[in-house]
Image (cartoon, rainbow over all chains, first blue to last red; front, side):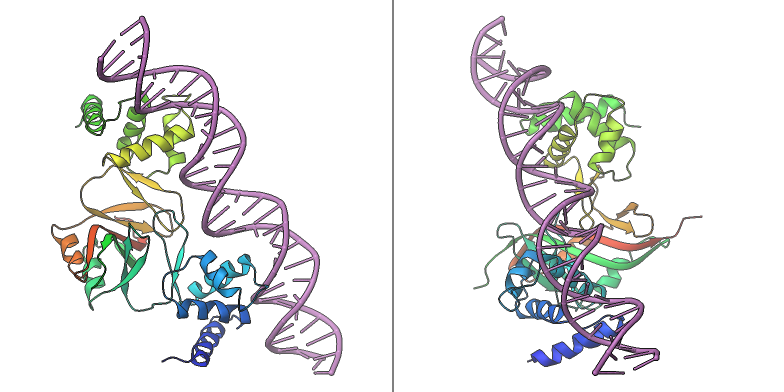
Length: 142
Length: 142
DNA sequence: TTTATATTTAGAATGATTCTCATTCCTTAT
DNA sequence: ATAAGGAATGAGAATCATTCTAAATATAAA
């Protein structure tokens, strides 16, 4: 298991690599994301961070989440125009959005699939990233 | 070329199939989408519809676009939290979002690709749709 | 036609996010 | 240590796209 301290140090490292500071707020927010990987919204993160840090503001939550996205520690995910959701899974993966429950599941992708998908692009298109979103119903796994 | 009247009749047909009425507003808006397939926003559509129909309101534009999406005549496309864009291309296709210019391109997909992508889902996931979004830079084709 | 129901419209309301700017916190050079 | 300078935070206002509300109008069916 990854200890809190390890992830704190990894975070501090990534931040300083980008010329940014490690702050208690950034740590709390990153830990919130690592603790429950259910693709919370900024408001969800705010609610989960408050017990740890009662004075934190929603503006700071947005700032910190944006910072973590910039450092490539977190991915921002959007479904239609719903609130942005945040995901600390850095492996290449797609998202499955359950339309009944609103819940989101990470779908691991086999090596090479993203490249294979990219290969359908005509030669004048240079894709920096590919996003795959499934929508449907997830049957509860027995 | 598809005449205006043909698409009007197709529209009227699709609408009545869904128990909806054909109205001048819905026709104008559908024609706006067919005329310039550059993935306009609701505001763009509003601006393009006004010369044809000066009294049309933005609420009606939203209503009509939503109606067209419901009838499967139009696809709604979102990039991050930007305004929803509308696309009358009904063939299976992905979208390429040019990060420099903000422009969007349809990418035709080879038959079977969407099914192939769906096949990476674990068996308990039932996908009704798959969306593929590329982001990057499109070199101007010589 | 008359009636019943859809649709349109203007404007208010909403929700997520961003902006502003004063305050506080670090870091580095002195 | 200490002061200066830049980052980061926080409270509240502002923004933007969209949805809601309610009244007026249009359409289709009987």
